[in-house]
Amino acid sequence: MSVTVRIPTQLRPLTNGSPEIALQSGKLSAVLGELSGVYPELKSRIFDDEGKLRRFINVFVSDEDVRFLDGLDTEVADQSVVSIVPAVAGGI
Amino acid sequence: MSFVKALRCRECGHVYPIEALHVCEFCFGPLEVDYDYEGIAAHISRDTIEKGPGTIWRYRDLLPVESDEYVDLGAGWTPLVRARNLAKVLGIGELYIKNDTLNPTGSFKDRVVSVALSKAKELGFKVAACASTGNLANSVAAHAAWAGMESYVFVPSNLESAKVIATSVYGGTVVAIDGNYDDVNRLCAEIASEEPEWAFVNVNLRTYYSEGSKTLAYEVAEQLGWRFPDHVVVPVGSGSQLTKINKGFNELYKVGLVNDQPNVKVSGAQPTGCSPVASAFFSGAEFIKPQKPSTIAKSLAIGNPADGVYALDVVRKTGGGFGSVSDEEVIAGIRLLAQTEGIFAETAGGVTVATLKKLVEEQKISKDETVVCYITGNGQKTVEALAPSSEVTATIKPNLEQFSALLQDLRS
Image (cartoon, rainbow over all chains, first blue to last red; front, side, top):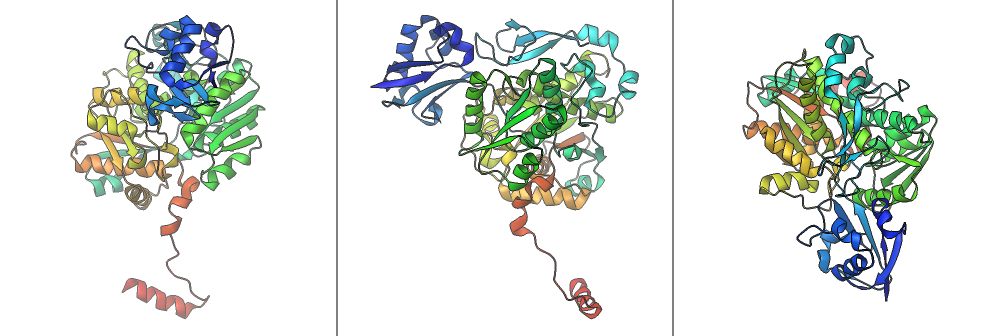
């Protein structure tokens, strides 16, 4: 029961350069919690002081923005991909 | 030479070198170009600008490029048209149209791409890329062709055919993504991580790219005789253009090119089918709630706007308003502008004109204001939006009698 979390360039120095991390499936909050357990420095980059996702981070589960799903309560099913993407990109 | 000191995070102030970076590594906030404004003020003058090229590069001291070898197809210095007919219809005293349909590839994107690819060449990039709703794709493909760069443009698969044709003609690779612009954008942000040798103009070069939109403010002030308008109406997709127009006015004052402090109300225009920033404005929210776009104004169909919060902030602080207009109002706006001023705008321009009309009706724009309406893309690109409601007046045989009969009918 494994999921893949994709790490953006900006955070790879904190994952020893790894672009993808395999973790257990479950709720998004649990998946990202496990990620912060493995790489403690990631925690404060992904979450704000209140434990919410930071304002300038977008998280996608199976290509869908979690704000259109259940946010941190979104279920991340086996084999799915979680992408962490900086919000500031694109358009004008 | 340039007056760029560094890049600085807009949120936490962290300082970065002048490289292809767009996001703060600490808080993920956007990076902004930090200039030596005192140096610029000592160096720049109205006279040197007026003697400069008839493109955005007349303002080179205020743009983040070192080299003199610009990637320049002639973007900018487009006409500021006194719109007397439209003003009369709407009941505005002094109205101008900034006609950016007349850029090399037909939209204001040529301004930002000219800056981005000039910087890309300077930083040694050989490949240009972008996520686009169409106008940017046209512009990146054209400028890359001129600059001898490879290009990869990524667009949503439901894009207007004219925008696809006007991109592929320049060569380069056009990849349609089965999804909306936000999907394209997210994919490109991920590709940018995997292909660091690519200059994604609106991802890793975004910090430089977006600065090109400041020239929309510089030109308007210069064309008005070095004064500021009272009110501007700007279309909002990601919100970057609106934010940068406001920045441009402030910079002109900061470097002493205009003596009076700017007091320009900045109003935003969105189609109701994709109006996350307008919705936040109306509901008093501090944050933008993303939306799944459904609108004919595809160049504004960005449901997850990167600079939405900043655009919201500018509109609120300057005392501007917002318009959220239906597809029918967009079509009516395109026709109104065409039939009063002879300017054919793309759907985003219809959104802007419809918003202008609405703001006047709601008395958010007063009769004694000098108003500038930014028309940022050419109508030839989005003819499909008008096709269902556009027909010839009549079809006749090549025969003078038939024509005379028709004329009688039409006049009766």
